Image 1 (spheres, one colour):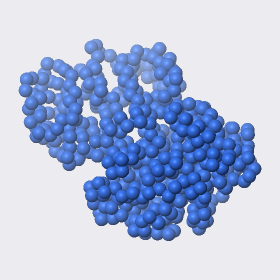
Image 2 (cartoon, rainbow, N blue to C red):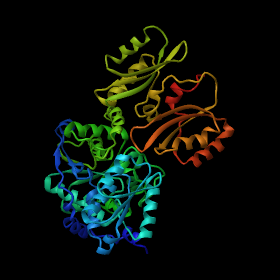
Image 3 (tube, one colour):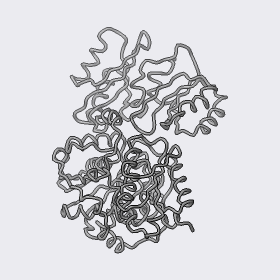
Image 4 (cartoon, rainbow, N blue to C red):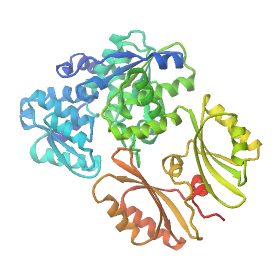
Amino acid sequence: MTQARQQQEPAPLSNAEYLCDIFRAPVYEVAIVSPLQDMPRISQRLGNTIQLKREDRQPVHSFKLRGAYNMMAQLTEAQKKAGVIAASAGNHAQGVAMSGNKLGVKATIVMPRTTPDIKVAAVRGFGGNVVLHGNNFDEAKARAVELANEHGYTFVPPFDHPSVIAGQGTIGMEMLQQNGHLDYIFLPVGGGGIAAGVAVIVKQLMPHVKLIGVEAEDSACLKAALDAGEPVTLDNVGTFADGVAVKRIGDESFRLCQAHLDDMVTVSSDEICAAVKDIFEDTRAISEPAGALSLAGLKKYVDQHQVQGKNLAAILSGANTNFHSLRYVSERAELGEKREGLLAVTIPEQTGAFLEFCKILGGRAVTEFNYRHSNDALANIFVGVRLLNGQEELDGIIADLRKGGYPVVDLSDDEMAKVHIRYMIGGRPTKAMKERLYSFEFPEYPGALLRFLNTLGTHWNISIFNYRNHGADYGRVLCGFELDDKDLLSFTAHLRELGYSWKDETDNPSYRFFLAKSS
């Protein structure tokens, strides 16, 4: 068995062994005891005492340093001399690089070619040797394992290793020392390392504390594993909260989470954006999306279960964000808080119609209004409305509009409408055509668009094309094609050949409302 494989499959530890390993973890040779900070604004708003564990204050602006250092500090002298290797596009990479620098161990990090320059530079700044390979994490990891076998490097996994889990568990030890009266702790879940580590210590020392795992709804690998009774691999994961975009929960982290977590909650990208805003307003810290995950779950859980008067804590797990992604966060935060509603409304094409429409809104602030002439009788509008009382108020607005004779479609939860359609109102073809609409996620690397056009654009006419990127590793594309029914089989085969994540949006109501040819 290779050295790399041995490091990936150590024997499981008992709860008592984990407790000992957490207490004696040498993480404070590089990490700090991060503050457990009060959040007065959101505490008042939610009727609970809420605190935030500030792991963004670590030297690498993420909790990942703890686990990486704990594992690397325990390597044999021969293993340290040979060096270590890891695969990561972000926080784990920086944790391994800094740990290697501190311990005098050569650290090689395989990063996807799509990794933003700022993250590559950060790893190199900590002394890591960066190897750029592949277009995604899986390809980078495969190359890292190859190099480990070729050179005898020790592979340092990002979450599924007892030493890594124990290192992350020091967070739970600190939280109990900082506030011995906690009722709930909300734990972010990607591969499960931090949730497993915190859970295994908290449930032994203070078993009455409720531990709630939080996942992004588009990468909920732990929930899928709990439902199946064992780890399963998701077909696709969302890329917005890239720090938790994991297809398969770790085996050991699943074992511990299954045993010790009390409940789970999943949150949308919009809810994560709202939590990023909450963190900024209370602390002036700018969280990465995955870093705000547990606070988003806290808010949702409090609302769903009517939790009041309790001591609650969330973890700001990281703050390594691309500045340009904040544009997306800002746009979506209001929707995540249910402070804005998006509606498609049909109004008569006549003088004064918009005035009458606004009267029905009852003086509420209109945040967005997009209009395109449809025909001489009717006009379709895309409208945003500021909300003070969330979904209940929006439901009332919709009821009032329908009572006034205005057909309405609620687009507040329509992802395509929020990402693309709101910026494309008015584009209808002037001739009848058999058009089908698809959304794609483009990896951000040179030649990605050219590959797309070579694979699809030379075979079928592209009738719509809209691209948006918010500073992430993937851009969002909406594309329409002229397709006869007889072409669908061949077209689908080309989509598989392309290899990008895609979805057929032809029946999406916002497309039918604003972009499709009028019947």
